[in-house]
Length: 425
Ligand SMILES: NC(=O)c1ccc[n+]([C@@H]2O[C@H](COP(=O)([O-])OP(=O)(O)OC[C@H]3O[C@@H](n4cnc5c(N)ncnc54)[C@H](O)[C@@H]3O)[C@@H](O)[C@H]2O)c1
View 1 (cartoon, rainbow, N blue to C red):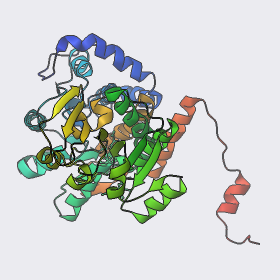
View 2 (cartoon, protein in one colour):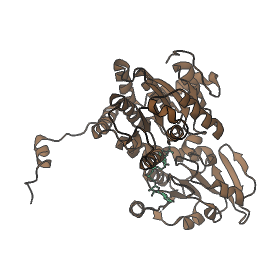
View 3 (cartoon, rainbow, N blue to C red):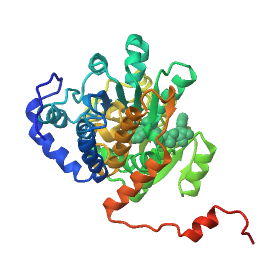
View 4 (tube, protein in one colour):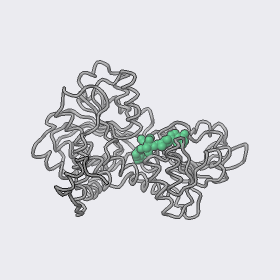
């Protein structure tokens, strides 16, 4: 990595760059698929001159995505997609070593976060890489005159895609938006194994609690919830699942977990994790029922899964016990409820987010989605799109190759059989 030019930026401390550089290079070792794409981008320059902003968790893996986009010829600017998820050394290195304008500081206020979103839009992007759809929503709400300059966006996470589909239904989504999360090589692995491991990592780094023997409540049994439940069980916790979808609830039962309503789970849980993408799934009535010392956190995209306003209203002033650990004493019961990471995604607030090996496939999807938007410029209708299935399959194939794992291919006889209907009993 070498500095290309001096740029404007807003990072915590530019002198952290050397440590960031070392960690970015460490992550890169676990990202062979993205590396292959970067090599091809470097040779072919498919993104030459494209002005692009990325709103993402500023982590070592994101840094490798930004380097890939730069290698393809894009002019990229990066902002944080969450006030607590930035790794300040990575932000510094991207500025100092790669010449990327970065606007991201761990612990920035919501006001600064929103200011950075507007700074990014001032960059006059043609492509937006979004994570949670805050940039696209701000563009639509505040920058109508700029919309014609944008020829597409990509979206990283489930919650952002829910928002994009709502925009599409309301008739306000003005361009094609690539639903990166909906690629199988993204949500099967990132949401399940990435969130599964890193959420537990965040809880342990914040608290250093022993998981074995605890009653661990997972709220939401979607892709992320499945991963969190699976890994909590692996560490010896007694896992309880709550759901609102009967199919997911049956799946959790058959996977061997206890399923019950949240009002009941609230009374028995030692640790609670929300992963629903929904609002106030732990509400005042649940906090009121919790045992003394219950630990509560969120790994869903936004910090609204826990109703912390309700908790604040029913509790004594908060006590900071240690970094990312705050205690609320509920007046009515006298019980203490411990909230981690201010209710923001705990895997990024208290740990480092997903391991690079899983982000390799997520960000391969991001890079190829950006390339797809550039290649199809002017051809795709406004709306939510997903990458063609063969790209998904190719990413999985590359990952297997990088892992040194071979698989079988269909024989001509099998192919013919699968495409015929005549042969039966
Ligand atoms: N922490 C991370 O790094 C990370 C990574 C990927 C996704 N996410 C975010 O995590 C959230 C979940 O993502 P996902 O891919 O698992 O989504 P998903 O749609 O697969 O699963 C969400 C589940 O929550 C359930 N649910 C909704 N409301 C509920 C309620 N009131 N009580 C109980 N269950 C409820 C739904 O029925 C669904 O099964 C999203 O906000 C997503 O953006 C976070």
